[in-house]
Image (cartoon, rainbow, N blue to C red; front, top):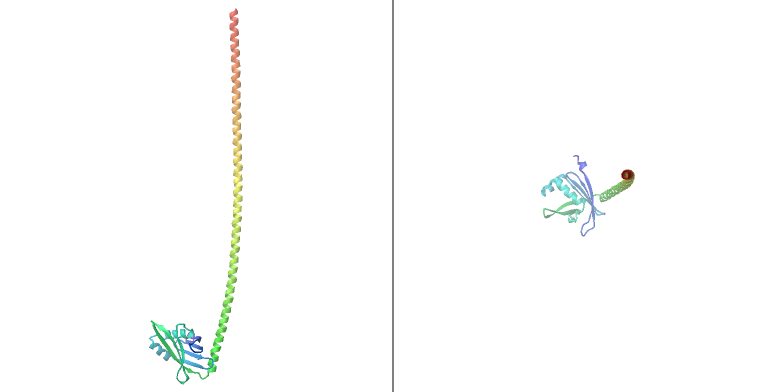
Length: 248
């Protein structure tokens, strides 16, 4: 991969115990790095070559990539469990150091930073980087805020649509239930009418049967009465005949 594609930039406002804060700008390549440091009035630089980085990595028994990754982590973001230092060295140089733990052992890395020949340029460069980073961050915040608002509007629209569908579903269910009740009541009324009609027909049939039975009994009584009267007349005729015979 091309080196420029692997280049990263960091800028850290480093708080050091017992001293004023400093700004550390790092440019990280795939096998080396450059550091610029300023306290606002003076500046220092450290241009670590590939050979120096490889030598340091070998001393710590680490691959170059792992060494650079760890250095970037500690100089890109201040680690709360690390002790940072920026102490004086020979000829106006400074020694930038930080500690870390490895396998339970506390270790310290140190790099020598030489005075910059143009402190103003280094300081302005760091300030420009911070301003650009702040602008990018602001734009990112604005874009994320817009995206959030857009998502919020979309969520509200979906919620409103969901509520509308829910209301329509409830309305449909109520209408369907009302229609079902109407049909059910109509069928009940029809069945009730059929049952009443059937009961009325049965009552008429029972009344007609009763009338026929009464007529039959009445007819039988009349016949029995006629036969009885005929029998009485016949008995009377025989009695009169016997009387006549006696007189003769």
